[in-house]
Amino acid sequence: MGNCGMIAPENPDWQPQFIMTGAVKAATTWIQAQLQANPDVYLPDPEPHFFSQSFDEGKQYYRRFFDHAPKGAIIGEKSADYLAHEKAPARIAALLPDVRLVAQLRDPVKRAYSDYKMFFRRGWVSGTPEEYLTSLDNPHPRFLQDGLYGRHLRRWLDHFPREALLLLKFEDIATNQRAVIEKVSRHIGAEPYYDEALAARKQNNSAERFLPLPMRKALAPFKSYVKPLRGNAFFEYVRSKIASEIEYPKLSPELERRLREFYRQDLEQLENILGCDLTRWREAPVTDEEGNLSKSGALRPEELYDLS
Image (tube, rainbow, N blue to C red; front, side, top):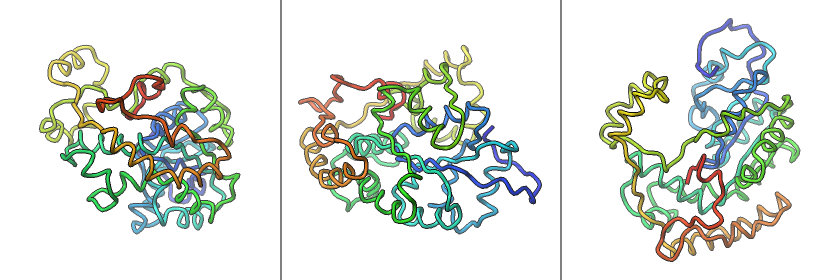
């Protein structure tokens, strides 16, 4: 349901009725997959990134992402970088003033470390977390900036009414996954549909076993051809003989404390927007005394979808 194609250019019903704006590394892929299972909803598989990275390509470029949308479907898209992008809210408001918005937020410290880990396993960074999570003055300031939710949401609320924006917390999935999908579905005007089998699958889990980085880079152009083989017994057996878990540099307790302080004031602003207590995000430990990811009180989505 998610690949781009071509349809008659006069089709007037292509514009998205809802957008999932992020945040990056906050389980938005899981929500996307559940919505794609709903026969009344259409989301393209790739993230368009139109209002952030490809705006200069023009409206017709954006339209191509929705060419396969069935007539009468509730059309949407997910681009997780929209939430933190300075120009995205104004651009979206100009083209889609009545669009419904969905944002899923996650403990900003865990989000920052998760983002770093994704870059690390892809070979885009090789240094320790201290090199990237200590200051905004580093080659990848998004690690820290993307978690300043209070700042970003104020920008969105300058262009959209509060009722247009559904805000979810990562922990909501742990409490009741079905309820999250029902809430999102109602917000976008769709009949709720929950896929039990899909709920048990892992999405973007950093604890997954990966092929060695040089092999992953060599095979990258063939990713779309290999994807249908995932789950095949022989394919998975061969892959298991080569793949292994990645050992990530640890997030030290001292760096975690500095990150908690970095986000403290912004979280207070976020509490006013959400109308809920975020003490857990201000004070919750990410690591134990030895710098290992704490398992005590860990949420089930961390293990299934993480993301961590």
